[in-house]
Image (cartoon, rainbow, N blue to C red; front, side, top):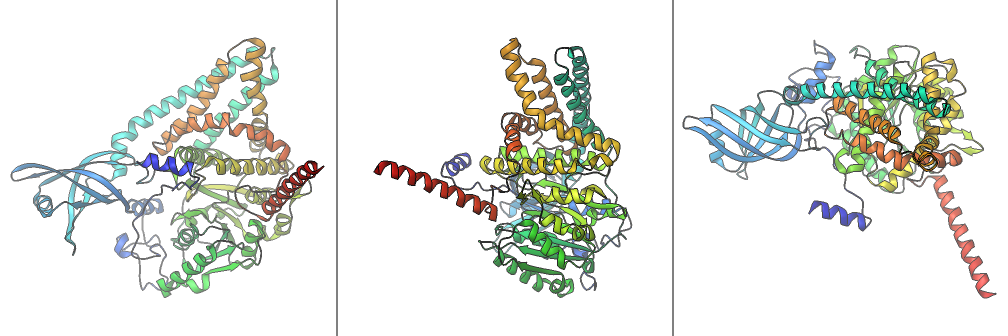
Length: 627
């Protein structure tokens, strides 16, 4: 029934409903914000400790907090209890779960009594993909103990259970060991095979030296990304390093997500007097402004000790001026030395800001990107492919660039800059033109280029946000075309100064520019020209593509242990069949300034031009008919 409903929705043109995690709401709206007056602290949910008072490592504290996050679920749970009369088996429902325990809804008081009298309890259930964070999906069979039992006024009976081992520990014992062994072996085998294949290419240089040189360079480049990504380590948390931070959220027609974005930015484990949030609405035409106002009013009523009045604000642009203008308006009134840009459909982890600022202990660091995960991973196959792609793009590709302090794109969902750098380059950023056309997108890459000219850029894998990605191919393809155009434009701009950077970083940058630009020509040559003219099936080329896509999936399996790993291969096939051919279009249209996925001023102008041309053609046809 579910599948049929989705299919009918697609045929009718209705939006697809996203599948999101459902964390159980905390009774406090700002459960992670430290209370500077210490009238209320985080004792009831966090064992009486805060990060400032925790004596151990910050990472251990964060893991402990994350293990206690509960998610609303609907599982069938098989219960096996050993009592005085032997073993008793029955089924009930799991209604919320964390890494440490599960809340069960009993069918009746008899089941409750059996649980209360049991000497041993064993639970068996399956964690459905999408009901807990990626990597937890698995079948669970383990011991548990009853920690509380209640009966509500409407005669429902609930039993709170604590697992014998946390789900993270259970996963490590049950599946992580052999997955690590298998994935490591596969990565070694695939890498060795690719190296041998590329070594064989030297023999064929005399037939086509440029083609085989490309294949060797491309393989070496991609394998090096995985190597340096493996060597990368995030900057550890220094609890005493808390510079002032201003979060700026640009918003345009995001009434569905803006409330959640604002709450996630305010609900940060960070000193109250060191963090402010500014929402800049770019003259939205939906109910975004109402949502912003309502959210801030609710926050003001939450607790007077959080200084919401003085550190959470919003402003509305008098006309739609574009994302860059909205970001700059926020930067002008920002109070603090560091500025964080957060997209209006992205949601921060409660410890994101504390992690994100750590690389700025280096005075030469000008900007830092956080890691962006996909929030709606399990919606459909398209979002699953994007989830794998996002993880590899950040955890491997950006991590490899960060190894040389030269991240080439501080991505829009979560990035941090020194305010002085933004102010110094604000006019050039706002008025950027390319081939006479104003640059209206690619703002993150453009600002990154300004930073990279004279400063270092980094990546902090422990600073995590999640974002909503397109769940329909039409929207996704428009987004990818916009990204390719901005990548090509800004890569050309960066090419003017990247040669002055660290030698390895410079070489990899220019190779990373040449490889994707030349890829369509190489694919056509191998899959079309050679089979037709030489009557040779491109076995070697296809095997190489398969291995490079397989290594992407295996790395996802190794690092994230997610059931989505196979979609890495599917994404590579999708890329070769569809996305790759956007690159030639981007070659000849990279000066265009329309977004394609939202009605910016440039999109409005383009639409008006198309309507005029359409009316002109109709008018011309009518004139011909009358004559």
